[in-house]
Length: 182
Image (cartoon, rainbow, N blue to C red; front, side, top):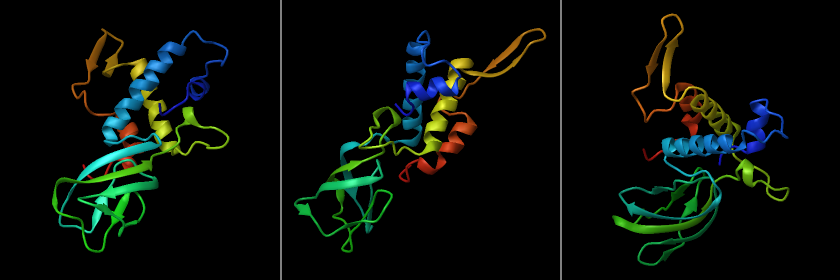
């Protein structure tokens, strides 16, 4: 999850000893985290990923779950070693990549240390903008799920018809983290 329960409670001004809303908050955090990862078309959690990619007429391959910490193996028909990781999950190979459908497999450690998984030895690395986007979105869906506008006099409520889109402030915070391959 992109936000810890403790941080959500602080932001929402809920005393840490008050556990009456914990279950609801955890569900909201999980739903907002999943929606954000779906929007960005990637996972943010630091772990080992195996990606199968198609080689095309390019010197570059883009991996989804950057930042990359360690590349264990790049394999086409054989193990490839003549590449460089040049930042933001991009691999560069001077000769180009073997062309084919789903013919390159990359095994790597990538992603961010999430707030809920941080330790003293490995502190959180998730950018604040992603965490803020999650906090905003969980508050929005917890308060008015699907409500676009409301009016009190003669009671009128309008619901969103775009169920796939994140609210504009949330999407704006996530723009730098949306995958290049979309």
